[in-house]
Length: 178
Image (tube, one colour):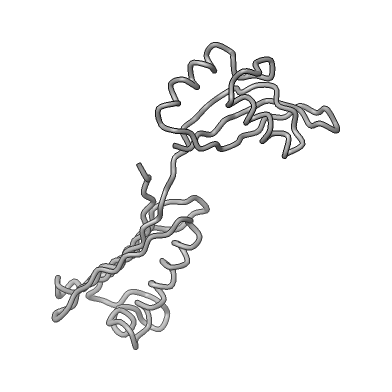
């Protein structure tokens, strides 16, 4: 399990106080023990007998920070990003999926799949659904979740209203790794 330690300290050269975080991989069964040390005020520079204090002190020093104390411990969640293309026509169907460690790579794949679906040489969507101005032609439904600066779930969906067996759905989903 990866824990995020929020620490207080000060810069070695300027003595300016700072709050900073560091991630440390810990065995799952140590979280309760570490939270007990935190509650008892024992995760600070005055306690030299805990291995975690020594580790935090050493890691802080690489940032040129003198460690004073841990003020919070949080479980750092890990995520993966799943990009899926699900499509169906009258004579075929498919499900393609791709896993990524970071959001920007997943978003890039998501955008590339949309570009491919809009290519008339690759997909029925590109040749039938949109007109030359990018407007949706009559007889088709288009839905798209707008992108924001946040890492969020995205969805791009096209359906043929006259044939329920023709659709194309591209999604980007953030999935917590447990």
